[in-house]
Length: 340
Ligand code: DAH
Image (cartoon, rainbow, N blue to C red):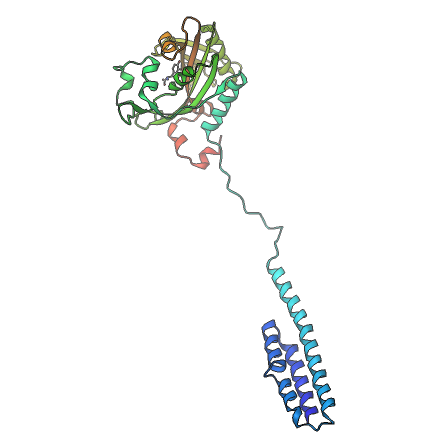
């Protein structure tokens, strides 16, 4: 009787294992047949009703069936485990032949590209690159640069005043005063940076733009050094055939002062649409550092002389890349930026 029952349990259990299909179902089968309240355990409990001489035999049989079921369970568990792993691997397969996801790369701004070129030219001539504060004392932005209290450049229409003493710098020239005051001579530096003026936005104006200041102070520096240096700068920036001309001008912090023009790199000086028929393009302001400025910044004006210049960075970028509207530089449209 028990024999038959055991045989039935075994067949049922093995069938169930074969068709289980997943690890959860397998576990349920284990509980159903081998668990504390399982069918085999029930048989074991009923051993007490078997005659004592038959008990060892039947007991042995129960254990055999249990071992067989256990073996099958372990075997099937391995099979199902492997299957599950394979399925997972398949799901996680990377198809290396699929096109890759593209990283969206930004692009250096034309101002940055232009600045890097300017820095390369001047560091190549032994200049240091120095930065100064964008929020500046009125004293450095104006007074120490020989711009007196009643000078029109100080007009509220040009200058963003924070209070009576502090302004958003209108030019990079105050860095000249800061460097001179440190008293380490000789000086050979450029100072690029952002400047601010109360201007309306149009194709050639913006309330915030960039300049690069230059300053050289040493013994025996003359206007010839200024001309030679800036002519070389223009050639490196716009091409070897570029010629320069200096027109007298006025800046409070230089004497004499000049504006420098370069021959139009589009037409070579003949006159074209690009240079508005002039053949020349204005590029920067410059001059010999005014003795008053040397004096106010603690430099012996009888021993030292120097020259300075200031160039608009946007102007260089616009010219170099033939961009006709400054506003394009501030929109940060990647489709525009990518072209340079
Ligand atoms: N700071 C002047 C401006 O913003 C430009 C300039 C002119 C700078 C002559 C100089 C210079 O250093 O010597 O218009």
